Length: 223
Image (tube, rainbow, N blue to C red):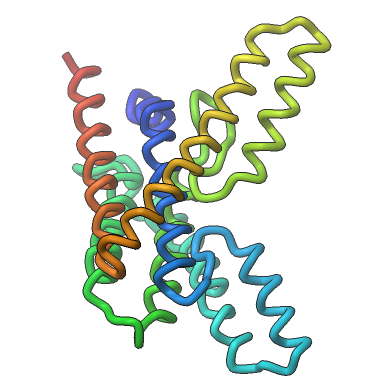
């Protein structure tokens, strides 16, 4: 079981999941009505702006993904408790399969269902960020950048002051993760121009790749 946990903390897996995180943020913003489905800070601010302007309907539009993000955290903990590590699939792999399924369905839904799609993406992104919280023992996030930027800058600064190359290396890994998010956002933008609503399937395919990577690493460790 400990080996599986190390697989889920792989830098390569973290990079791939963060790329998908950036991709989905670009997708929801560009294709689904200007909502950031991954991290809810922007949605909370936008909801407050619309409330202050008396635009109640628009404010409620942002409330749904916020609520679904919270529900996703709850669901991740449910998976952890009831699926755990005793079944054929690790609970984190079950989370990825659910995310793949939701993204696949989202690609079929037209613009009239933007609120449902954004809420669904917020839900699965919460699952992902709760399930994959560490990279080589370091706390990080796959669907948002601020915390990674803070941690990376702190480690680089302290590493420079203390002449600690290990801390500086860890700090650079945090910066690398944020670069992966930016590249994912750029790739999402290109795909949205080409495939519109169905570009979300690219994210689903990448998550299939993440599951395959986990299975491959587990088999390598068993040899």
